[in-house]
Amino acid sequence: MAESTTEHPVAGREKPQLDLSDAQWQSGSQGVGDVQVAFVEGYIAMRDGRNPQGPALVFTPAEWRAFVLGARDGEFDLT
Image (cartoon, rainbow, N blue to C red):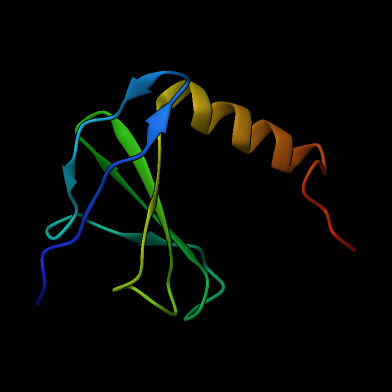
């Protein structure tokens, strides 16, 4: 299996390059094809469960909190 790493700049700050190859990915109860998250080195990674070899988004804890609260408030509801 290919090593999965990711690195994304945030507000003038670089996040460390994370090795996600051994990450313990968690899925929601909806089954295959949902979003998966993993907690790695103090960061939260998120990927598409239908494409586990694809890219992952990496959040700081503060970014993750803002994302989750926004999702709960319907900020990302596209319907």
